[in-house]
Image (tube, rainbow, N blue to C red; front, side):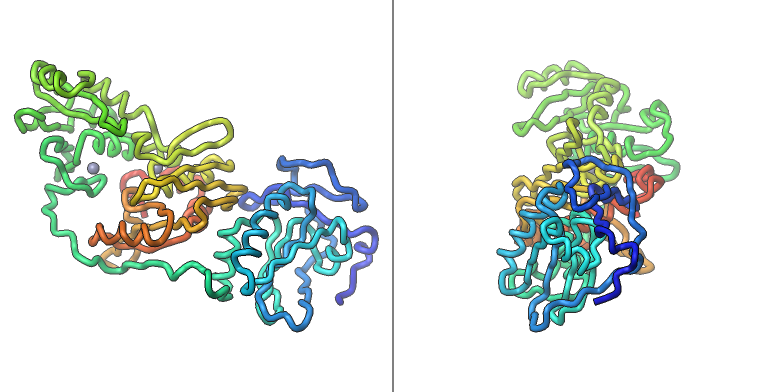
Length: 439
Ligand SMILES: [Zn+2]
Ligand SMILES: [Zn+2]
């Protein structure tokens, strides 16, 4: 047992972690063992400096399993949020990991024994009883499992199967460039083909919709100048016409997703309208509709039907892709609730965050795919929004990949998808998903 410094002989100072944001530890002091009034808010940090280094508490001898020790209290809010997570881990990893909770308000000696300054504190011991890591504040289930994995501690049996990695395409993409959308990499429907004139080359887009996503990915562009560069395909005749001069039949498909058909003349559009209901609009109206809903992380235009719903406080927004939806927590520095759709089946995947970490994940087997491409010099770079996704389980991800032989990238945890966004600087967030910045 280490020497307790003189200043610690008075009632041990235990701090409750109310919120752990990047670089900020918010805590409230606990005086004389008196539980403070419940406070879910982020009180300002008053970190005790009474005891400096991290003490290493020994496990009782004879322990054979890795052990997760959570030191908390029944009434502190982050501790209460830990309780169901600990219960799940206890059940799911029975016989493979010991999960122990100690209430340091009921047992203040334990707080001293383990040198705990804040609650909750989680201490990770390997099977030899050696402390490997400790964490103060709420710690989500996925984050805990990811930490064990990072520590190289094998929890055996029920652990997630090894991640899927695809370094090389199963089949390379042999589609002619002119038939591949510059934005989404999808096939270009010849009836909705959209062309943007560039300095030297032209960009081929699958539809006017992708053209608006393209617009919303440009930095400092002049809308009028951009409009003038765009040509759309006449749905009836197949010829290219200037986008600003065309008429658009704006309807909805069976799923409520907008459909946009361009026509060189209004009469033909009106004829089409009889068999296929919708409004006939001009380019400026189409633009307003298309740009009405934006990704709350990267500002790209998005159809809500394609997007992830993101709730923050009382507000609802959208993430244009699953990974962007995690980024909303980073951009707004707020806890969020995301409802994403499985990339294969469309079934809902619900993620809640707390202080930049995963608080809950439904279903717990949900996983993520991070599409990446290798540059000629062998570096991995993000393959962009359209190559990312969440899946309810690894089986769905595998099936999805089977249908995409040209896809390269790797499986990551949803905790990782969130962590990747949380570490971005405000400057990186400002550049997020802009053309040429996706690296
Ligand atoms: Zn496209
Ligand atoms: Zn986005």
